[in-house]
Every structure is written in structure tokens, then in C-alpha cells.
Length: 402
Image 1 (tube, rainbow, N blue to C red):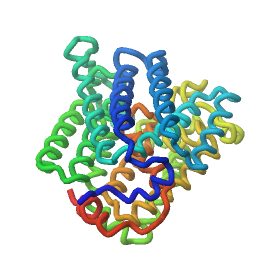
Image 2 (image 1 turned 180 degrees about the vertical axis):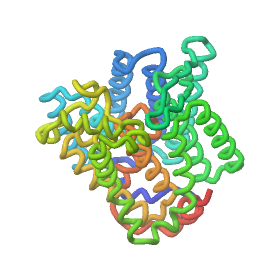
Image 3 (image 1 turned 45 degrees about the horizontal axis):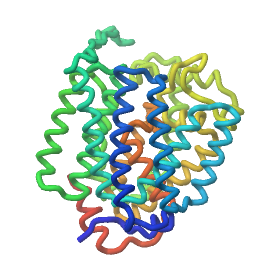
Image 4 (image 1 turned 120 degrees about the vertical axis):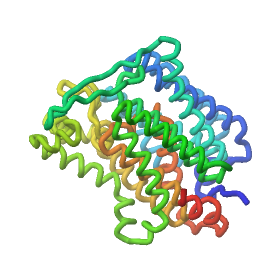
């Protein structure tokens, strides 16, 4: 019995459905590998501002749009509106964050048009490949495993972290989370034989890498995914928890504003690695009109980046994009709950909580981020019809138990 979710919503989005998907499926697989390779290149042997980054991005986007055009893809009105808004802001303000919004809105429809199992398999393989590529570069001597030493703010303890040849531990743990979470999702979503043993091994590897890097964000997110996958079926029975799941973007923004308010607190800065001070400095440099027309949050006069996906989306995408995101996200969560897609909801929730103190929701080189956007846009724009009875058997409630 197929565990594919009802595609009535997706069929309204993409003309042709999955019947003519082989060519698009192959392209998405290739695109995922290009995106994953690009992510590692710009964080190891190249730099984030390297032309390689945008060359690969633009190439992937152009080819994707070409395939969507020849397949006569029908875009939802909401996505067309967001594309127009982002394109206008990109041209008028020169805000490069708007290009990322455009990238998401144009690439995700390609993901709708292929079989879901093949999509997640491709995502898991590309995520594993990205992590392995870091070690391949180390083995070839193209990078070096530097030991980063710092002193904690309150206790004065020395904090030692290995970078594994990347420009920062947070990015490396992005790769670790992506490889582990997408693999576990694929194994349990389609009930692959040996899933428990493989998942245990993956978590063990992640634990070793966490010990070497002290990368708390990605490692915590892995365990959040496991816990949510085990408990989500029970969590959604409570109205209050369903509400919290639905308004996650608003909660993320509220928590970021709270940390900015506590910018002078030694405790808050110690616990959250100086993010409160960073958020406060960033917000002091912004004004209301920056939210309206959007402004880049990277390499401003006051900060180099903002480790908050909510602030990144609000200021980088603008108020209209942020409001649209909140509405679409709420609809997506509602649809996932109604269709008993508990594993999908667990994955999405762990990504959102990870994004709370990391600016990764618009880091589209991370494959797991593209898969999160896939869930948000596909199910946020799907019709809210009852799920077929067979959907809740192999693909939802049972897969919520790891």
C-alpha cells in the first residue's frame, strides 16, 4: 500500500502531477547534489562571497525554471504574488536576501512535481554527501581541522572546538543535523528495513562529532526531532499544543525580541553565546521602514550576520513576506495535523526550533532547509480536505514512533 499523501492539493498546484515526473525527478536529484556541493565549497575552500556561490545558484534556478516552463507548471496565486514582491524589492533596494526568497519560491514547485519518496531519498543522500565531502577535503589536504579555543563569559572556562576544515562549527553541525535527520526521516517514513540500527549508528556518529565540536545547536535539534517523532501523535491531541505548533514563527520572533531586550544580561549572553547583545545591536541599527521595504541582515555596518531566522525573514524578506510565511506555515501545520502526518510535523518543528537561534531558514544551501520549505509551501497551500483512510496507516501515526 502506498504511503504517499493525498495529492489533491498538490495537483492543484502543479499541472501534470507526477505522471510525467522522471525528467524532473532526475533534475531534482542533480540539483540537490549541486546545492549540497555549493554549501560545502563556500564554507571550506571558497568563501561565502565567492562568485562560485551565485554561479551555481543561478544555474540551478535557470534550469529549474526551464523545466517548470516546458512542463507548463501552474503556480499558486500566493507564490506568484511573493515572487513579484521579492523581485520588485530586489530591483529597487538591491537587497540580496530577496534573491533567496525568489530562489525558494521558484525551486520548491519543482519538488512538488516528483514522487515524495524519491524526493526525500534524494535529500537524504545529498545531505550525507555534503557531510562526507567535508572529510574528503580534509583527507585530500585541501582543508585543516583547526582547533578553535575561546573562553566562556561567566566561568572563564576554556572552550575547545574542532572545525573539521569548515569556516565555523555552526555550519558543520548544520551538515550533521541534515544528514542524520533526513536519513532517519526517510528510513521511518517508508519503514526501511534496519532503520533502528542505522538510526542508532547515525546518532552515535553525531554524538562523537558533537563532543569534538561542542556544536550544541545541531546536536540538540537531532534529539528534538527524535523526541517530537516519538510524542507528536500525543501532542497534537491537546488544543494548546496545536496552537503553539501553529504559531511557531511568531514565537520565534517573540523569543528573539526577548533576547534583544536582555542584551545587557550576562546570564543570557553566556547561555546564548552573545546572541542577545547581537540582536540588540542589530535592532538598534534598524528602523520601521527597513521592515517595510526589507534590508539585508548580512554584513551590515553593525553586525556581520544575525543568528535568528525570524529576524532574518522579517528584515531580509520584509513584512509582507513574513506575514505570508506565518499564514502559510499555520495552514501547513493544520494540514499535517489533519492528515496525521506526525513524522513530517516532527521534522518541521525540529527545524523551526533549530532556526530560532540560527539564521538558517534562508540558508537554502542546506538540503534540510529546502525540504522544510517543501513541507511548508506544499501543505500550506494544499486544500484542507480529509485525508484518505490509508494515509494514516503506514505514513503517519505508525511512523511517529521511532
